[in-house]
Image 1 (cartoon, rainbow, N blue to C red):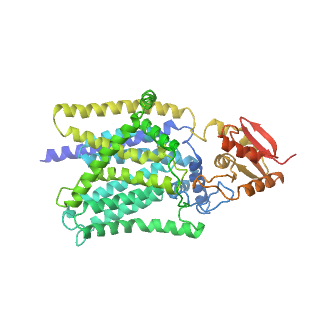
Image 2 (spheres, one colour):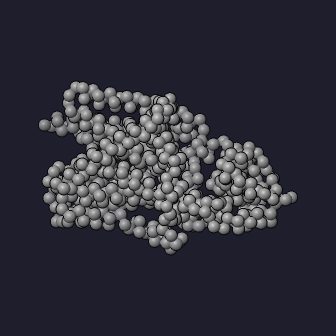
Image 3 (spheres, rainbow, N blue to C red):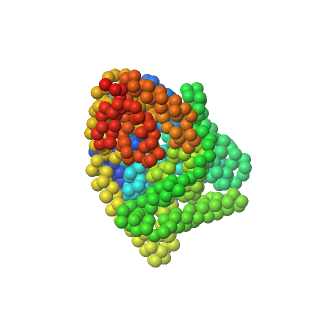
Length: 537
């Protein structure tokens, strides 16, 4: 008996050590592939500038814009973590690389733990960690200075605490009243982690809906359902309420969203299909072959969605209408339920709140994580059949996916290491236009179609350009003509300049606006398609 206990403990320790080593490897991969820093986009600069604003003691403000208003459009989670790290003296721009590298390792570890806990198989846990570690799409998400890695971290942690809540033996009787305090602790902790996910990305509301629906479906009486949901919400509400009150007092809005209907565009749908194809086939030649076959990717996506929807509906409704039946495995059930909750959240946001949201990789990433979880769950289910051919099929699928994932990962790391992605590229930091702007007298206003990189490379806040359409609401902007007149007056008076990057490469509609803005101004600088207009000398 003693030998068995020692062997079991050694096996557990070995599994934790392997997952820890994979986490370290994930951190190393990210650092190795980003020697010039993480990829940067407009949203990245907003998070970095927000962190710098917090560090300066001015609160969470949009210091990359001349308006310097309180930020409500971007939740504060990622910027707050960067600011916390910044207390050590590390600038948030550099801190993003450190944070997301650690998060790639941490998320690898958490997924490995989830796979282990879900299947009771240490091998399955290690397999899930490896599938995540070698997934090129997941790696690209962590190689950009965005909030998704932190959001995934809080989501995975919430899945684990929720499973721990349902795993307590006292839940078979009366889970919350007159029982050990453990049940309430894990449920409240799940609510807090869900709130932190929401404060990292507003899509965290999908987690809230997922856990509440799971509590309703999986408990056997309405008393338990309502009591557990109330305790969970009690953990969620305080942080979210505090943020909402701050936004209302500081900016008179909760999240800077407006309820306006705008349908999904064909371009947006095609973007989602392409990114899903990239997730399925990280090797470019295979991806091209997939896309060339008409509707193949759509059919694969449809089949996966239908299978998961039927499975989760069957498991959930069976437990709801027949409470005496066995509770489904919690991590696989909530992960699948979350896919549909998250998808509903994103689509509703696109339709009703934010027309600028697209089915890009970073938006789809949380669903991809859940798909990896369900892939391992399926492979373990095949393995449990014990027949040689089923086990052989499970092993072959796992080895095949790991092999081509590793190949795609190697290619991705090689590509990323060649140079910065997005704004860190040489196109921006070697820009003569940026050098021109840095030499402007202090106090000179800068109107630009790229205020983010202007702030990044000149440390000057900028003004956004007048526009015919609001990208968030999809509705015409008011005061367009007045905005143009005010801009030209400001430039011609010598108080500001107009800088248009990549002039001539935009769409016809955007280009017509640029021409209208530049009309009557003096072209003082023109290199590589970057034009700067000033008052006449």
